[in-house]
Length: 347
Image 1: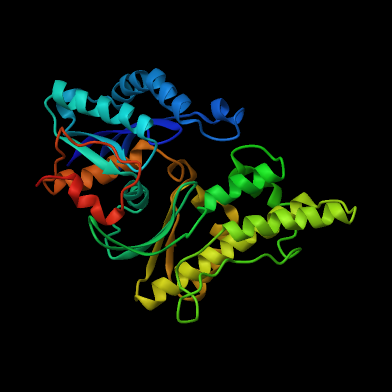
Image 2 (image 1 turned 30 degrees about the vertical axis):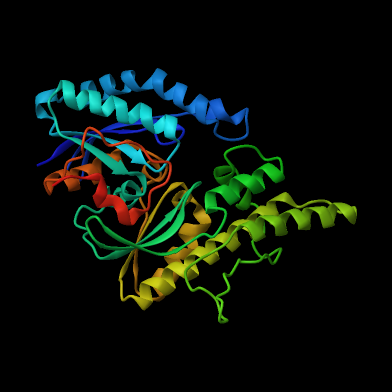
């Protein structure tokens, strides 16, 4: 059994968790959404200061609520990439300090690998290979999980991430921040077929389209032009119908690509991770398509869709059990490809 205390501070959630293999002993998350709402988005410097104020208390609370002592912890982990550099440094520095003080192995974890491993927390018997759809405010990717620590990006967004598109459209319609949950809720009362919006296919140089890449900046622009046209004609802007059509377009676009990729590579399981994995439209479309093609689709519970330390601890436990360790000289990276995950560790 491998027990890890993990820290996640890559953006605007301060999180600490203790994981025993694929079981959650305790998971604590403090969201900064109320702090950043007044700015309409995450302010990096504010996020870093909030992490500093919150993290020590969360570490103490995690140990106390788990009924464990430091001698029962096998390793200390923290997200090291990708993310906001200042925010990452807070968590990484705390993890290194704890590792030195308590003489434990230290592990730096890739944030996206954490989202992939979140599914292990609800499906402990899951093993690679499988396909992972990662959809959040900063990332939209289709990842072929070949083995533990072995990933191949099959498709990704060429511009806005799905969650970013939700935020931008919500800002355009003056709905508030964060846009994803607000649009999802409003969509329940709207008609998803009210407006035809572009899915954003990516053209290939020799003709045709990239089967797995996607684009959402054009969709955002289409919503803007639709609103401008309605206002020009003096018509009422049907917000619920617009956001329902917008959400449905994103859900259909992601579903088509995920299903096609899984079928083409003979993968029978699709996992979904990231904040947009909580979206009801995506869940409905992807589950229906998976049932049609006899595929298994796994969504983590809502608490493990958004950023959390449990998923980071799960990823770290997998590496630690295989003898992987990170150097105390490991730094943070605002960007880092998933195929470089193993460079974070020393065997």
